[in-house]
Length: 170
Image (cartoon, rainbow, N blue to C red; front, side):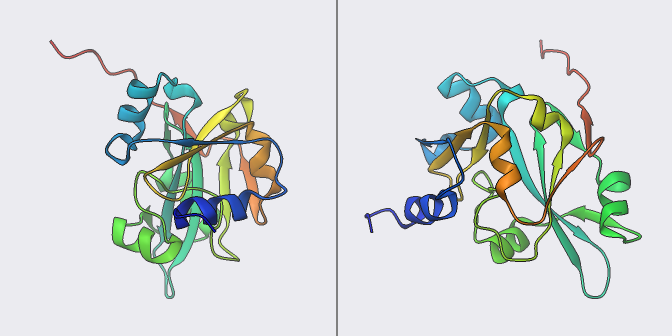
């Protein structure tokens, strides 16, 4: 065990999953846009893991992996997959409670058994992706095929849509 329990947990969840690199980052720069700008990664290579909750009794959850250049289709694609009438992004508190991960570090690795992982098909088209590392101090750099090693993973065409380009501020 090292002095960094978050790294230890991440390494344990990645063991035997194939090629990957752990990348240490300043926790203040863990949010996607700040991370990419500070460390020179393209937003198109950044894959965010977002917890979604389907409104039912009891609630139904899924972890969704989507490129930073795309917007998750919560109201149609995710809701339909969850089989609920309504769905929304889980709150930061819900995310932390269910996954043990902080916003800015949520990852598809080390999630609770039985939690579905939905991956937008566009993620699989990248040569490499940068994922959260379970804490705001770590990222995982790997080929997207690493996601296929997860139990309960499903690659979904149209889970997310390219985000509209935002004009620069003047």
